[in-house]
Length: 296
Image 1 (spheres, one colour):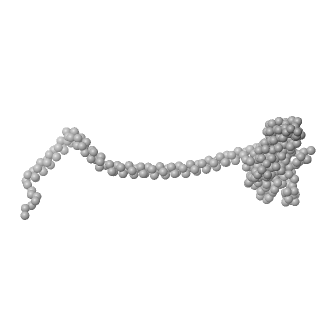
Image 2 (image 1 turned 90 degrees about the horizontal axis):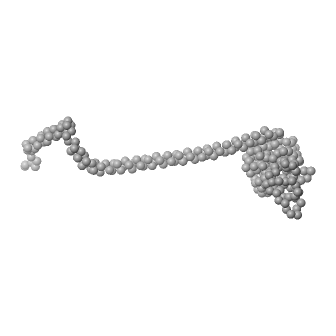
Image 3 (image 1 turned 30 degrees about the vertical axis):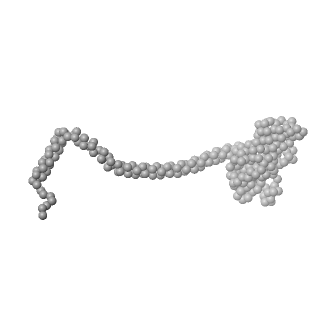
C-alpha cells in the first residue's frame, strides 16, 4: 500500500532555504534595523486581535476591582459612622461635664459668699405639678439635713426642706401654692409676702397697697422675718404690676431668680438648730415659711 504522505527531496531543500532566510532576516533586522517599518505594520494589523483577546480579562479585572473598592468603601463608611456615633456620645458627655462644672463653680462661688455652713446636694427627682411643686435631694439626716432648712441655688432661694429621711430629703419650692416667704424690696425696704402660684417662673406679692412704691424690675430679697430664711438672699424680680379697680391692693407678680425648673445642684444652708426627734418624725406638724401674720 502506498503512503498518503511521501517525502520529497524538494521539501527538505525548501525547509532549509526558509530556515536560512529567517536567520538572515533576523540577523539583518538585529544589526541594521531595516525591518522596523514592516514590524510596525504587522503590529498595527494584529492589535485589534490582541485587544479583542484581552477584553474578557480586562472586564473581569475591572469588575473585581470595582467590587473590591465598593467593599472597602462600605467598610470604611461603616467604620466612620461608628466612630461618628462614638464621638457624638463623647461630645454630649463632654458638654454635660462642662455644664456641670460651670454649675458647681457657680455654687461654690455662691457658697464662698455665704456666712452660714452649707451642704451641696444633687436633685434626685422633681415634681412641678401645679398643685405641688417640690424636689427630692440626695442628702438626709445622715448628712445633717433637718426640716425647715433653706435650699438655694447659685441664683437665689429655691425653697425649704419639708421631709427628711436618712439618705434623702424633700424640699418644697417657693413656687408651690402653699409656700410663702417674707421678703423686702432692695430699693426701698418695702416688706411683703412672696407666695407661690403653682408656676415655676412666677410668684405673687401679697398685700401691697395700690399706692405702694413698687416698680417693674425691683429686686426682692428675703427679709429674715420668721426665722426660716436668713435675710438678704435673692428671691425674685418684679416683672408685672396691675391695679385692679375698686381693690385696696395691687396685683404684683415677680419672677424667681433661682432656676427652679433647671437647677441640678443645690445648697442647703444651716441657719438654725436641728429640730427635735418628735418634730422630725412628724413633718406635717412642722411650720413652713411664715405667712402674713409673721411679717409684723
